[in-house]
Length: 163
Image (cartoon, rainbow, N blue to C red; front, side, top):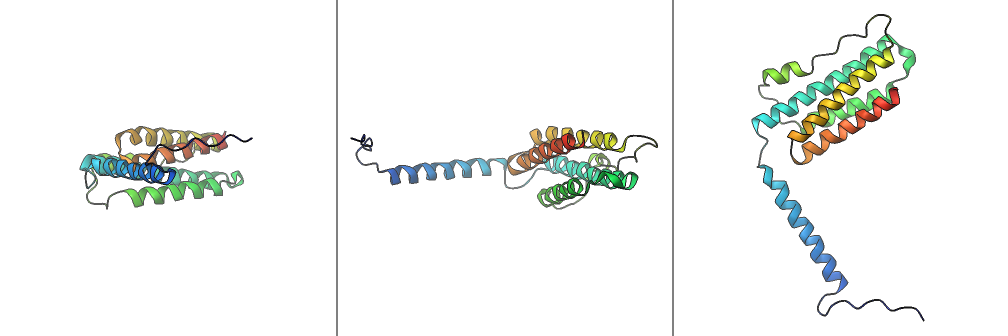
């Protein structure tokens, strides 16, 4: 004889329990989502603008590496870096007057030194950017922190692929 399922406590059906747990999850998400304030603070916006500049440098590094050594076949990784940049730009507050730190943070990387291993040079550029995004994620809140963490992890994947 098959064991019978344990009966639910009186007054609580599985559906009622599920509905209440979903409601609690939504309530908790709503409370935490609004806790960071309606808008992005100036300091947080500047830090996000810095990360846009860092990612612009990554995209530029891929372009420089492809120019220096077209045989590397970096189109997939370069496309991913560009998509990450687009997502960062979409998440960044509308550009007002960027701070001095934000305007200098993502200067285009220098070209690979002559005779250097282009793949190693690019891997170093990607590693620096991944670390910058990971550090910045800690100072952000909500979806912006998750986005930066995701991009940092993606760049760590690029770093491994370039090894």
